[in-house]
Structures are given as structure tokens and as C-alpha cells.
Amino acid sequence: MLRASSHLERLHCCALRRYATYTRQPRSINEETQLPRYLRRQSEFRSSQTEHPSAKPSEKVYRSRHFDPATAPNQDKSAIKLLEPHTLSGRLKKLCDANKIDQAVAMLKSTPRDAQNTQVWNTLIWECMKAKRFNLSYQLYTDMKRRGFSPTSRTFQTMFTGLSKIENWTTHMKQLANARLIYDSYQRYMTSVKKHDPESAELSAKPLAGYIKLLGDNGLYQDIFDVYHALPTEGPMAPEELVYTAMFKALASTSTSPDATPIHLQNAAHAKLLWTTMQKSLKKSNSFEVDAYVVAAAIGALSRGKQPEIDLAFSIVNEYYGLVAPGDPPSSGRIPLSQVSLDAVLKLCNASTRHSLCAHFVKQVKSRPVALGGEDILDHGHLNEVLRARIALPDTGAAASCLETLEWMLRKEILGKFGYKLRPTVVSYNLAMAACWRDGDWRIATRIFDLMTGYHAHDFMDGAVAASPRKDARSAGKSLDPTAETLASFVRTALKSHDRANTRQALRVVEFLKADRFFAEALDGGQKKAKAYFVNKLASAVVEAVQFVSGAESKSLIGRSEMDRWRRISDAAVLVQRKARAENSDFIPTMMKQWPQEEEGKLSKYKKRHPIYV
Image (tube, rainbow, N blue to C red; front, side, top):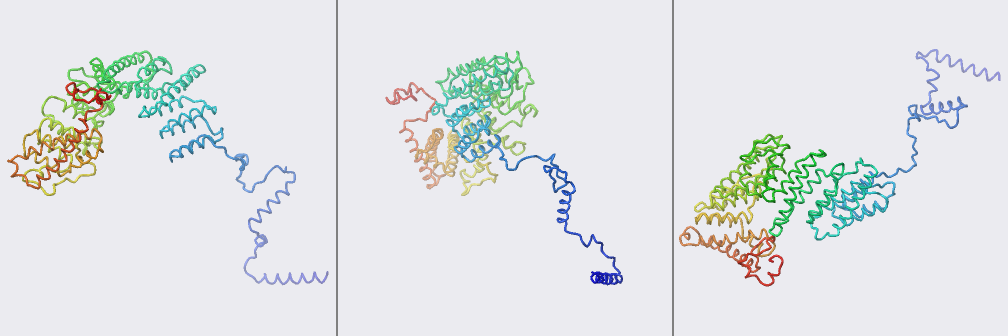
């Protein structure tokens, strides 16, 4: 032991001598023995456990000093998150958007009941309605009730609105019976809700708007009024603007054929009574406001009636929109004028044969402020009604007025804020060309041809025929191709001018635009009846024009090859006329149920028995 201690003393002395000659400060013991941080934290953690032996084993010590177990959510990560109804609705909509409706139905039926509710079923029912799966929608409606989910007011509104989208009810008569059953369920539901809570938000007549529309599409006008009279006059279940709008639209959707005239007049009289009843209910309780849609629908229904209904419609126009006819007292109006409202007003003017009021009202609209419905609401549909009115007026000069209207539309298309809405369409040019034919104004007809096509009609005149006619450079959609109706009116205008030079110019246009393609389509039988009607008129005009220019005085101005081409077009036109006569169809519209008495003797026995001719 003495030997070992002496050995340690010698080592210590040597160390002292070594550090005594070193100029740098020695490191501390802590610096020499500093461990990595993770080892130090582990040692501190162990020491904290040993220093507090009285700590309960349930108390946990966390490594992070920022972690507070009192504020952290105490959730078990191993627990399964339940599917919520809104998440299920989103998944169903994604499947339906991908046209996987059957998979969506299977998913809903196999989903746990806790994830389902009435709103989820309503979502899938509406998606099926959008896809025109009407039978499947009603099956889902029935299955929803079987699974214990009671329909709500929104469920009935979804069903009625979806069924009202059916266009051809002749193939969906079963859905009409389903709609009646749904209406009975709606009445029972509303009675039950009113019994338990008379002030419930579920009490509403809005779902009936779709049901009224589908009844009107089926011509069940008496059933519409049965639904209306079943509603209370006051309270949350009283009729409101949606119900009245649907009723007026249903009454206005009557056919205007001669066979439907009695119903047509009767519905207009009912519309007058309905408007009066609505005004009386508004005086008792102002439960809703009359908006532009109600007024426009009422004007449309009244415009098909007799003089009392027409007068009421114009008084409504004056009272609510402030449009004043000449001689009427001025009015400021109650509601702003909208596009839908102005369209109904202009159609009222033409339906009541007060054509001069069309241009008069449009002139007032141009000078109105924007807040009340000014020039910004005008579109090409409104101006087309003005063109129709000018054609219907007996005064001459309709062609010049129509040309003035077209040029105004083209100027406003460039300068106006919403000029694209005023761009003339094919219908606009056809109406203007028909006005030229009525007046026999060839000069304006060529001008309208230039505006429509971009070609220069001058390049088709005698002595100025160009091998390649000029065409103005325009942006896409501003140059339109003439239809058979346009060319028929164009050639007829040339014939009515009784000028062979104008007729030759028209035939060159017909040849250049390859109008014989219309004749080829007619011979193939692939045209609709409306188009075939104008193709037949074009064929008649071309045949007459070729015969008119075949005189001896025209031979010096027409080359032999050019005349041969015109005769080939005329031969094709003759074939179209023969086919029309062979089919014994003088392109009479299907709405005409009665044949003229002077032609009745020429009908065959089959035609006399056929419902179209009887």
C-alpha cells in the first residue's frame, strides 16, 4: 500500500510540473466530462424519478416541457372516426358527377344508418332527377320512408321540381300518377306539422310551384285551381310569388292552334281572375312582394285573351313598369324593367296587333335610366320583336325601318357595354329580308345581304361579275351563312322588282353560295318540316327566276355556260317541287286541324279519316 501511494504521488508531481509550464488556462472538470445532450436528458429524467419517490405511478412526466395534458385533446388514436352525413353526401355527388348513379345508390343503401339522414337522401334523389332517372328517384323516395327517414318540405320540393323537368309526358304517365301520390303525402305532412307547431318553418307552399308546372304541362288546368283553392288565404301556407308565377306560366302555355282557341281564351279569363284575387290578398296581408317574374308571367297569360284581358295587361305594364302608350297618363312604375319583362311586353304588343307600340316602348327604354331598366337590358330578341312588328304594319317603308334597326344593332355591338347581346342573328336578317320582299326593295335587300354575309353584292351585278367576290374581314361569328329562308326572300325580292338584271344578280348569288345543297338534302329526305317548307319556297323562286331571265333580251348578257348552270339548279328545284306534290304535303303546319273547304273534295279517304285533316 505504501508503494502504491508513493507511485501516485510521483505521477501527481509530474502532472503539476507539466501544467506549470503551459500558458493556456486549463479546462474545467465540467467541460472535460460534458456528455451529449440526449444522454444528459436521460440522466436528468432518471434523477427526477429518484428525487420524487412519493409520486403516484399514474402521473406521467413528459419529455417536452411545452406539452400540457390538461389542454391537449384526450383522444384515442386507435378509435375509428365515424362517417358523417355531409361527407357521405359529398361522396355521392362525386359518383353521380362521374355518371355512376347505380354505385351511388348502392353506397347509400350499404352505409350505416348513423351516417344517413333525410338531407343525404334528398341529395341523391336530386342527382337522379338531374340524370332523368325519374323511376329511380321515386324508388329512392319510397325507400327513404321505409328506412325511417321522414320527408321534409325540401324533399317534396325536390320531387316536384325534378318531375316538372319532364318534357314529353306521353311517355311518362306513370310519373304523373306518382306526382299525385306525392302531393297527397305533402298535404298530410303539412297537416301534421301545423297541428304540432303552427309557426314551424316547414310550413310553406313553395314546393307546389313544381307540381303546378307539371299539371299545366299536362293540360290539367282545373287541377291547378283545385290545388290553389286548397291553400289557406293567410298564414305561412298561403300562396306566395312562386305559386302565382307557376300558375300564370301554366295558363300562358296553352297551344295557340285553332283547335285550342276556346281553352286559350278561357285560361286568359282565369288569369284575369287570378290577378284580381292576388291583388285582394295583398291588400289584406302583405305576405309577399310582386316581383318582375310574377308580372311577366301574368302579362304572358293575359296577352292571349280577349279585349278585357288585353286592356288589363297594358294597365299592368303602365302601373308596374312605367311604359306609357300614346295618350295614356305618365307613370313612374313600381319595379325596374328586366329583360324577361320587356320580352313579355313586346310580345303582348304583337299578340294584340298593336304593333306600333313595339317601337314606341323600345324608344322609351332607350331613354330610361339604367336603374329602372334602360338601354342595357336590350338584346337581339327584343329587337326581333320590333322587326316583326314593322313587317306586320300595313304602312310601306318596313324594309328601310328594318335596315335602320339592323344598323343600330351593329353600331351598339361595337360601342355598347353589352354589345354582344345586340348582335343580329339569322332570325334578325331573315325578318329584315322578308320586309324587303314585302316592299319589293331590291337596294335594301342587297345591303342586308352585305351586312349578313360580308360579301359585296355589287360583285354579282352584270358587267361587274368578279371571279372571286370580295368578302370583308370580320371576327368569328359576325359573318353568317344565308339559310334557305334568307335566299328565298332574296330571290323573291328580285322577282318582285320586275328587273331582269336584279334577278340575274340574285341567281349568281344563289349559285355562288351553292344553294343547290338545300335541294339535295330535300331529295334525301333528311330535313325537318320547317326547313323543308322554306326549301320548297326557294325552289319555286329559283324556277320562276330562271324562266324570267331566259328571255331573248337577256341572252346577250348571259353566257351559255352560266345559263346551263342555272338550268341545272332549276332542274334540281323542279325535282324538289315534284317530291313535295308526290307526298301530298303542301307543307301545312301540323297545328292546322281543318282543311280548307274548297280543297276538301280533293282529299283521299285516308286523309279524311286522318286526325291531322279531320
